[in-house]
Length: 188
Image (cartoon, rainbow, N blue to C red):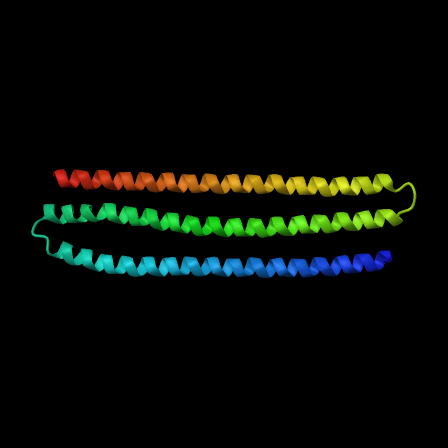
């Protein structure tokens, strides 16, 4: 049978090791996400530079203002679609990163709750008579904290989903506006 100080010492050591492991995991995930965003931005910048150069060359060959504006409008829709694809890709990276963070946090919290409850159960076996209410209150507090985290997690997921929906709606409106501009310029 372990003494209470030994139990707390082992629990503290394990908790520290768990926190270090999750910190390493989250840091790795964050670096991976930053790398994906940097790659996305570099590819977008390179593509944009090449396309801008080609578009400028086409615009320089325009014979009159109407042809110039027609060529300009013709580039609006593809650019809008590329912006939409970029936004979706960026949202996808953010969403997957958030999901990995959430999963890691949920795993850590579940493991910590399990270990704390196990420690409390072990301590309650050796607790003096009359401490049942205090132990019950402690278990209830842990359960309430866990429920609070679950609610926070659900609210965060809803907020991320709402943000993604708003970004997609805004991008779709942008594409629609670009399509209308292109259609108008072709009719002129």
